[in-house]
Length: 217
Image (tube, rainbow, N blue to C red; front, side, top):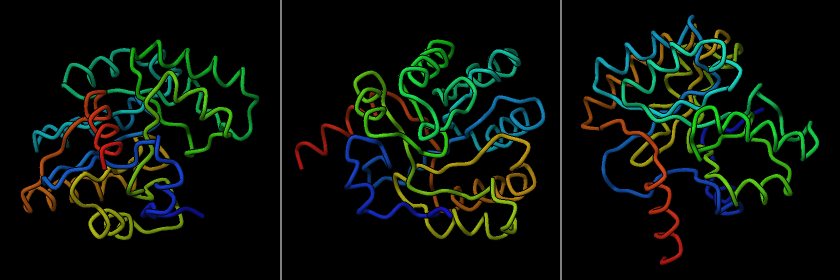
């Protein structure tokens, strides 16, 4: 089970995680987890380019190692990157020290302080340690493209009905998601572009600004 729209009370429980960017401007922050892989990532880059859209790719270090040319295509196109552990580790299922080493290895490969834990799962001690070194990025809207039990149409609706100004939206550039992703992503780009939205990267300065706004509120 998962929540398509992250409730505000959950966001409030973990205020040091980034769930969305506080803005009233028509900006969306599309993110892609699990790549880069040859079967999906180049296609994603093509779709984004058609709308001059920028996104943030939370990369699995093992895939960066296997497909450096595709990783380079991501960064050369002006997209942001973050780490998603070296081999997609579940924080709940792993001891802290090996997990930290795994996160650091991946972060060094992509040279980024942005980090998204696979499945959004971190133990409290893991979260406390990682927040001292990284910007932990969660999400406001989960497309559900990874879920074989939902239709491609529902995947699209999950985003169009729940995303708004400042939303961080999760897609996956992995093989498991491809059927729903191929249907939903072009339509999400078209839908929000027609409403006047732009699609921007997450970056460290955005997140610093977010923290400052929260503290001053």
